[in-house]
Amino acid sequence: MRARELGRTPVVVGDRVGLVGDVSGAPDALARIVRVDARTSVLRRTADDDDPYERIVVANAEQLLIVSSLADPPPSLGLIDRCLVASYAGGLEPVLCLTKRDLAGPETVLERYAALELPVLVTSPELGVEAVRSRLAGRVSALVGHSGVGKSTLVNRLVPDALRATAAVSGVGKGRHTSSSAVALPLPGGGWVVDTPGIRSFGLAHVTPDDVVRAFGDLAQAIADCPRGCTHLGPPADPECALDELNGAPYRRAMSVRVLLTALTESS
Ligand SMILES: Nc1nc2c(ncn2[C@@H]2O[C@H](COP(=O)(O)OP(=O)(O)OP(=O)(O)O)[C@@H](O)[C@H]2O)c(=O)[nH]1
Ligand SMILES: [Mg+2]
Ligand SMILES: [Zn+2]
Image (cartoon, rainbow, N blue to C red):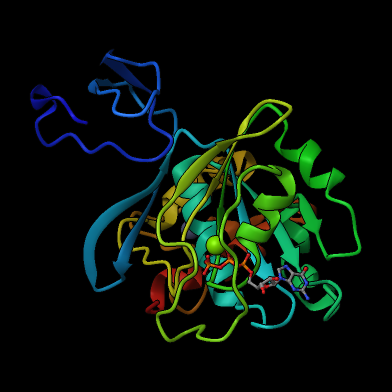
């Protein structure tokens, strides 16, 4: 339980805390959280873009696995864009995790994000999870995505005694979620994986275009030359955006980041 002196300080999954009391973990043992350590990263989302109430999805995660199924439900590029934006803004390294390869191919999704040079994991019941395992080894990673994309299925394959409930995709989009709270589980080889409940949208009311662009070293330097208040979308919105002066790979990356930034101007 929380100690009274914590006041309103939120305690979220991934937080590192100080405990006093009985930390044996035995049934009926009672310990109090007396301190929440400074966070190294914070993944935030708002309920939607018009409701600026911010919630923290996970604290201290180093990686965000953006989980999308290739079919059933079909991939939502808009949600992937939004999760990428939140990940860059929150200081997490994004990883694209495409599930249900047995049902459809990954080509269209991969093409959209190619210039971002993201790590990509592709899974299916027939493929082993070794690549996922080595990606997560020794690090704190969170899984986010729509309901029914296979987050808990993947966690169960990584952490055999996790026993996370999974369920057929029947009520997706109707507010039915199989997992109802975020849980951090220790990985057998070290590191943690955080399974989160499915989300329908990812509100970005708290994110500015600069937050996103600054996650890319070369682009961060370039936008120092942008006019004040530039949204980096290019003409006609920003005819003097310095991203248009780039060439080669940085230019291609900048144009991909622009695709993501349009998520900030659309509603979730
Ligand atoms: N064909 C196929 N089905 C899969 C795959 N991965 C998961 N599934 C199925 O997809 C359904 C949903 O999986 P879950 O793991 O419960 O999905 P979730 O993302 O945890 O869903 P929420 O907890 O509601 O957010 C289950 O019936 C799984 O068996 C896959 O690679 N291929
Ligand atoms: Mg789940
Ligand atoms: Zn600009």
